[in-house]
Length: 254
Ligand SMILES: Cc1cc2nc3c(=O)[nH]c(=O)nc-3n(C[C@H](O)[C@H](O)[C@H](O)COP(=O)(O)O)c2cc1C
Image (cartoon, rainbow, N blue to C red):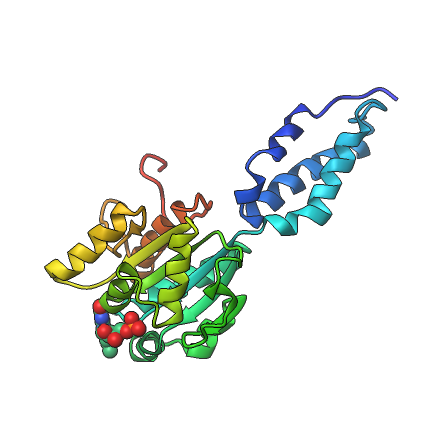
């Protein structure tokens, strides 16, 4: 058998632990598809010397990739802008990224007060849901592996709890665990105007590496709808995790 070696296969060995499932899937699908197409055209891709590349690729695709799925904890608290948390969950679901949702009591109330969505619909978007009072939830422990956490939106009360290590709700506890385990935490803080107390809490957390990402509207992409505005902020959050998305057009790409 004559053959061609797929040298770029080695790129699949890099970045796998942090690669979201959709990217990983498309990458491996691409190479497997490429292989099959080539085989149909009777182009031989593997020589007896490097047949093991193919076996490794198939093993990664069908057995190992579940280990690589990104898992994020999403907190929705009682500030205006719960639509950001909802859009975040919808997007993660579309991208096959695992989500574990915690909603505060006022987060749930805000969903009914300012959106057309039901709390049950929002819960249905997540892979796992924990009650904010359930301190025995998996996400209450650092031993539970997650890639990071996003609180969207984050009220000033929850911000204060996180900044002071006052873990009275599961959102605050899971955020505290995310910090102590040196994982990525993004707080989509929402209040205006901001008092010195709010700003001090944000500064304290920012100095620890927590990303303070308020849902500030941009106009340079000329948003035409509220959806455009919401998508842009959600996209900026996902950028922090290097998650590929098409929620907004990137500057210089149109
Ligand atoms: C409709 C509505 C909008 C609110 N918007 C904000 C807000 O933008 N920022 C904020 O910090 N609190 C806001 N609050 C007040 C919080 O809900 C309140 O402080 C609550 O105790 C937060 O608790 P939680 O962080 O556990 O959800 C709002 C409350 C309501 C009912």
